[in-house]
Length: 201
View 1 (tube, rainbow, N blue to C red):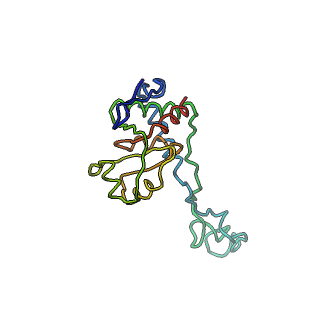
View 2: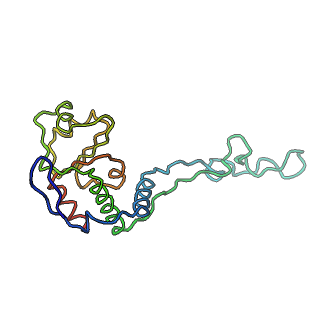
View 3: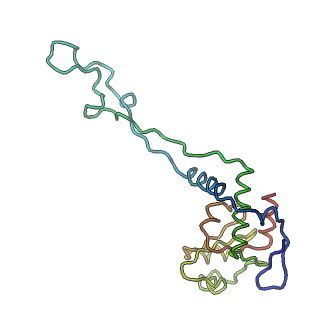
């Protein structure tokens, strides 16, 4: 299939197996959920009675004192004791096969193309690292989330985009399902598009 290159009369030919796939909502949801789950830290933890220092000796004898029986001063019902159901670090990551991951990316790319939300350009260069110059070049609309993808992007593009919270500039290696799903429009260079196609095959 052919994709028109913005600002020119040329087209770029890409594989239909990568950019004209059926959109599987279940697959995309599974891959996006797995990525978001893998980003969770899962580092919260508290100490149980076995983790709290001390409490190895029985505080008083079992009988004859009039006190309630106690085996350790680190019991959860004592001040300074451990937690009853102590939190433990968790691993929230979910396994996603490489084939599933690439199929989900191809499905998202295909859907973005069908909705005319991908703009292919020959190259992206900026003479000065000024945000105003980047806004003028991109023709940004208010509140529109834009993803700029390149193979070897100019440093001025990175510098000019830092003040634009809705603009995300990444290398094609950093493409992920969450970034693709959360963008309103994508601008990608021809070199990056060909590299993505080779990656998805």
